[in-house]
Image (cartoon, rainbow, N blue to C red; front, top):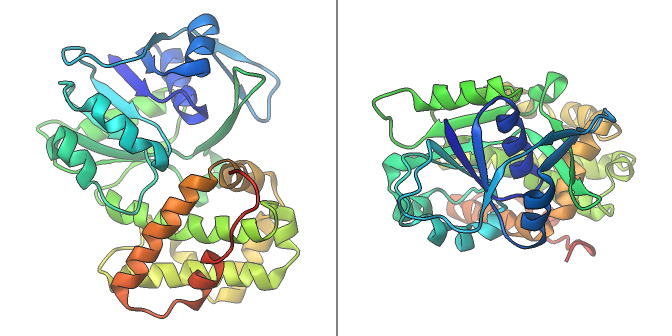
Length: 316
C-alpha cells in the first residue's frame, strides 16, 4: 500500500506518521525548511496529553512524476494553498486523490485537474501544531470530540470497489476514528457555516476561547450566525450533515449555554482556537465563500454579517 501525503504541516505530518506507524509505505511531498527537517529527522509526533514522542521515518519528494503511482494521494493543505498544489497533480496517473481541504465552494477545480472519478473528499478531525522545529503536538478527534466532528471520507463518483470504506479502514487501523459520507459537499458546507461563526467570534476576543465564554451575548451572536448559516444551506437545498449536529437547531440560548461551557475546556483551545489563530487567511477565504452562499440565498443574515465585519489583528 503506497500512500503519498502532499503537505507536511501539522495535519499532513500527523496522518503520514500514523499511517507509517501502521505499516503503510508513506511518502511526503514537501519543500523548504519543513522538507529538510522531515528528511533529516523523520516525523516526530506527540499527543497533546502525553510526554511521549513517537518517531516515524518516511520518504520525501519535492515533485510528483507522471508515472509515480500511489494507491492514495492525500492532499492535506490549507484552502489558500490548494491553487498552488493542483498543477503538481495534473499529469500524475494515481487512481485516487483525496482532497483534505476546507472549502464551501465545491470541487470543480479538482475535477478539472484530475477528473471526477479520481476525486475523493475527506476532512480530518484533528488539530495540531509544529513546535521546536519538528515535533507535531496533536489531538485526534476521539471520545467527546466526536460529538462535534469525526474524520470523514467520501467520493464524487462511485467506483467498482468500495475505496471509501477501504480508506476509512486504513485510517482506523492507524488509530484515527473515521466514518464515511455520501454527501461530502453538504458536509463541508455545514462545517464552514459552523467554523466561520466560531472563528469570527473568537477574533472579537483576540482568539481566546475563555475570554469569549465570559461574554454570553457574543456567544449568542455566534450561535445565531451558525443557525443563520444552516438556514442558508437549507434554503439552497443542502442537508445539515452530519445529522448528529441536530442540537444546533435547538433554541439559541440553550446552544449558547453549551458552547459557553465548551469554550472553557481544552477542547476549545486545541480543536478550535489554535487553528483559527494560525489560519487567519484561510478563514478569510472561507468567510467569503460563506457570504457567496448567503448572497445566493437572498436571506437576511444579520448575525453572519455582524461577525463577518470583524477583522483579527494578529496572524497576518
